[in-house]
Length: 233
Image (cartoon, rainbow, N blue to C red; front, side):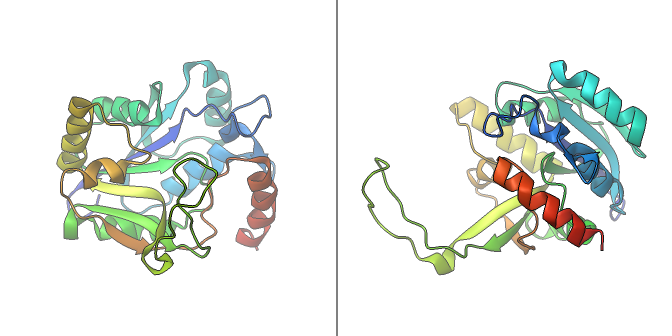
């Protein structure tokens, strides 16, 4: 609960993990002997504001999910919701199933186990300013835009570019309105903020560590096994 506002966290873990090519969805791979998803859930649990957890998973992954719940427990009230075709559909399923008393919604990738609990809370604390916050960091590399994937068309000003992460936090009514508008327009975004931005809401950036990686490839998994030692020391 934050200032008498009920906070519901969505953990999106229904991805296919195609880029990992490991024969198992990335959220269930282990780092430091524990499934990635278990690490992530434990971070969300430690927030002093989160009241309820919605775990969004593939139906076919329920054996893995049940194993995690049995072994590591979930120390929050929670509900399991099945994912949709795209991430946006999965989050929408979460919206349709969240507690009626929800005031603030936090969305987080199941494959981001290194988020700081302090940053989770900071994102929630700042959501009342504009109605939307996102963890992010400045882009370090120069970015090129190519329309055809072969020739560079232009180079945007790196000083204006931010790489966004999750959690992304919203007032409930703002996120619901954004999803309703997106579906009415047939629009699919790559994150929740992009949907909210299209409604005219300004999203506040919360500076965050570069350690908050999304584990998507085998290279990410190798980095994660190094990061977990840093986090645990």
